[in-house]
Each structure stands twice: as structure tokens, then as C-alpha cells.
Amino acid sequence: MRRLPGIVLALLWAATGALAGPSRVVSMNLCTDQLAMLLAAPGQLASVSYIARDSRASAMAEEALAYPVNHGKAEEIYLLKPDLVIAGAYSTPATTGMLQRLGVPVAVFQPADSLEDVRARILQMGDVLGRQEAARALVADYDKQLALLQPADGPRPRAALYAANNYTAGPQSLAGQILEAAGLRNIAAEMGYARSGKMPLEVLAMAKPDLLVGTSPYPRASRSEDNLAHPVVQQLAAQSGAGQIRDADWVCGTPHVLRAVQNLSEERRLFLQKEHGK
Image (cartoon, rainbow, N blue to C red; front, top):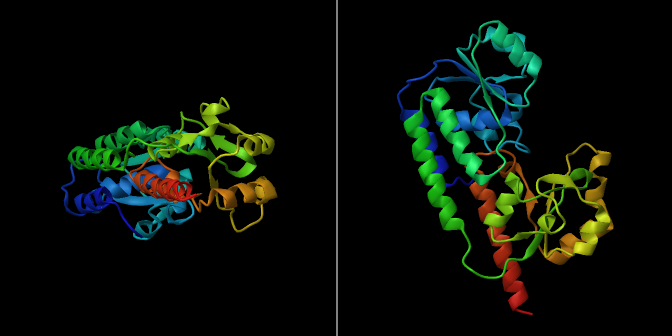
């Protein structure tokens, strides 16, 4: 898997840095899994969630193979004897509540809703792990790489984010900001979507986006994904000429979002090249 420079830097920090925080940490959330893997000192991270090994959702599925997994259950996590548990804001409250009653410290992370939030989550992880210096180094590289990816002045093709159940994402979302950082205009903003919401198929068709950024259906059939196979969606995807699919790089507020911006920037370049050649 191709890695951005900052991610290589973080993995090197994790392999060589000294331990100054909790010595036995368990993460039970996909996004905190990845931040912890990037920043934890050797031997500090005792377990990650089982989803961290799922390449459809995790940008660090290969790295997660090096760690025992947990399923977010209070009993199994308590038996791991952690001195810190890291959870997401929407992790199972029964689990985090029971762990806290048992005297296990729990650090809770909010999901990232913007590219700026990515910086904040990296620094927060550095704080809870006692790895502040490594976190600051990773943020510095994140800022540098993001600045390099900013497109030069020029046309900003109109793009649509379209997922299962007709969901789209507006400018006040991480996905929406990835799209805009790649030099594209989000049609969701035109339609009044600030965050996320359902965009009827008819609205999508009438908006006529230049690029359609979709999602891959899971192997098991789901009615919620029927909209992705609709002829109108397929036609829009074919007309846009974009093979861009939202993958694991888009899911969490980690430096891997830079790879999503990079890939989408390339789609923009190819589209503009095609339009210029007409």
C-alpha cells in the first residue's frame, strides 16, 4: 500500500520513541485504532478493534495484523488489564460506562468533521499517549503535505458525493472538505446540504455533476445500496469519466485523508484535460 511521507514518519516515531504515557492501551474504535497505531510507542498499544483489520473501512488494515483485536465488550477489554481505553464518542456507552465504573480510565474522541479536526485528533492522541512530540511532528508533515496538494487557480468542476441510501455530504463534513481541497465544487452546497443528508435521485440527476464520487457496495447484498446500481447513477458515473470511489482513506480523521485528496485531485486533472481536448 502506498504511504504518504508523513505516515512513514509517524511509523518510524512509533518504532523508536520513548514511552512517557500509559503503558498498556486498548483502542475500541476504528478511527482511534489508526491514530494510536501511528503514534503509540513500541509495546504501548495492547489491542485494537477488530474492524481495524477490515480493508474496506481501515486504511491501516495491514498494520492492524500486528495487534490483538477486541470486539468492544467490557469483559474482554477489562481482562486485557489496560491502564487506558480509547473510545469514540459513539462507541458502545454500556461498555465505556462499565469500564469507568470498574476504575479503568477512558479517553473519548469525537469524530473529525473537517480537515482541521484531523490536526486536533492527532494532537489529542499525542496527549493521551504521552507522545506529544511525535504528534507535533506528524501534524507538521500533515500541514505541509496538505498545502502541497492545494490546487492552483483554475476551473473547479462540480462534483457529487453519493453513497448508500442516497446520502451525500456537504461542506461541513470531512468528506465534503476532502472534495473541496482537491479543487472541486460540491453540488451538495448548491442544494443546501451543510453536513450530510439524503439527496433524492431526481435531484442528483437534475444537478448534472461533472464528477460523481461514489462508494463500493459490500459483498453481501443490501437494499440500502440499490440506488448505486440505478441506471441514472451508472450513467452519471460513466459520463463523468471518474473512477473515483470513496474508500478507507475517507472514513476517519487521520493523515490518510491526504491520499484521498491526492487521488481526487488526479481525477480533477484528468477531467479538465478531457474537457480541454474537446
